[in-house]
Structures are given as structure tokens and as C-alpha cells.
Amino acid sequence: MTSVSTQLLLVLISLLLVLPAVEAVEAGDAVALLLGVALSITGICACLGVYARKRNGQM
Image (cartoon, rainbow, N blue to C red; front, top):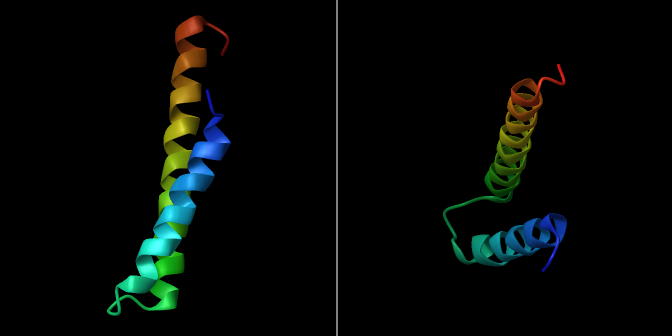
């Protein structure tokens, strides 16, 4: 089974390969989109971690 970081890297690389094919999207928009996706995933994982700790009584 592959690690989560490897899967995330594969997703980001596939997004980078798809985005240049769309001519309406500029480079700045593509970078902003990738940063938004990465920050959203990080935020969701952080919230799930806090929820799991509260549920187990560790906080």
C-alpha cells in the first residue's frame, strides 16, 4: 500500500499535467488553485485530528 504523501504527490503531478492543456487558466490561477487544494486538505486533516483527540479524551 502506498503512503498518503505519495498519493498526494501523484494527484498534484496529475493536476499539473492537466492544467497547461487548458488555455483559459493562467499560471497564477493554477498556482492559486493548487495552493487552495493543499491548504484545504491540510485543514480538513487538522480538524479530523482534533476531533479524534477530543473523542478519545486526550484533550
